[in-house]
Amino acid sequence: MKVKGTVIVDLVRIIRSDKNIDWNKYLKPEDAEIVKSLVVASKWYPGDSFWRISLAVTKEVAKMELDMTFEFGRLSAKSFLKVYKRLLIEGNPVASLENCVKLWNSFYDFEGAVHQKHQVEKGPGWLKFTVHDYPDILFPEMRAPYFYGLAGYFQEIAERASGKTIENKILDRGDFFEMTYRWG
Image (cartoon, rainbow, N blue to C red; front, side):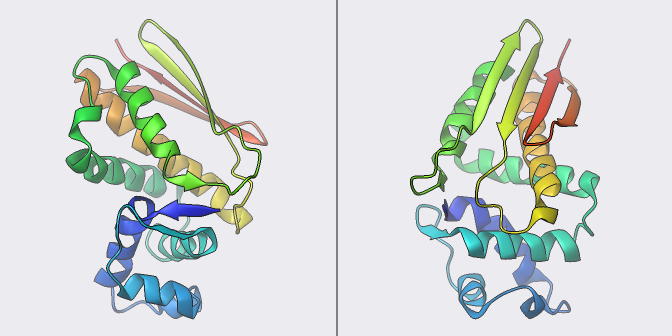
């Protein structure tokens, strides 16, 4: 698995900003090099480095709390939308989410692994994502925090597009997560 720099740039910023944490207990030398270097949004980075960097931030900053990772996802979406403003379609959260999911999928390369990333069901005033587990999650304890972060990311996009507070429901279904969003 590989990820684009867009996926890790916010994580790297967090690590760089807190010099009081011993990040080396999580990071290998090649990960530390990524953190020290200029992260280029369009460049591919190793998936294992992504998972170790994610684990470090999730353990040290979010304390493995799902609410915190959800909020981090929201913050990531705000950062993402500064660059990809045109993906947001005012008044249309479904189209906005579909646009963002298409682009988001292009940030991951599973290098030949068969992986059905997302399924979308939708209706008037609601949308449901089924997001299957990634085949290369390096640390099993990152599974729920990762998907809660993704749910927060989707929530922020839907709320910005709709201009309303959105209700969500996140369910762990074993080998996939179901994320349902409703707006009035």
